[in-house]
Image (cartoon, rainbow, N blue to C red; front, top):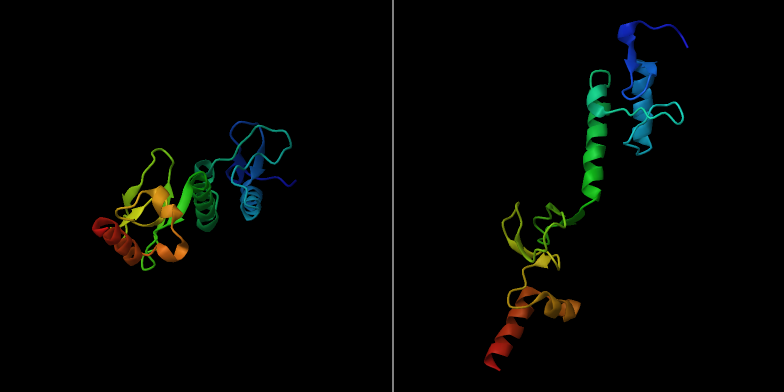
Length: 153
């Protein structure tokens, strides 16, 4: 509760409260430490909301970047995350759920995989057939032998 100049204060949008920039910076950093990204005015029951872009000029770059990263990660949590099934790639992939996709290509290694089963593409088998196979029967070579056996009776 000490006097501050106008350029040392920060006004929160959506409410009439102002705080010194040092206090708001520490407040935002503490909220982020607690994994809270929707940061509201410190006054209980106040509708004021802090937005990262409004706070950019007062926050240290590492705090601002942490907030931005946490918001992006929060958006990804709404989508299903999985990794490319090829062990030498393992790129992070996202299923946004907008379309039901089976055969897909990894944007990193450009190899085909089944987006439903989350495995390398199982040529010649529908997902239901693949899922019925025991774990030790799911390797590509084993599937090729099964297909050959079926084709040759």
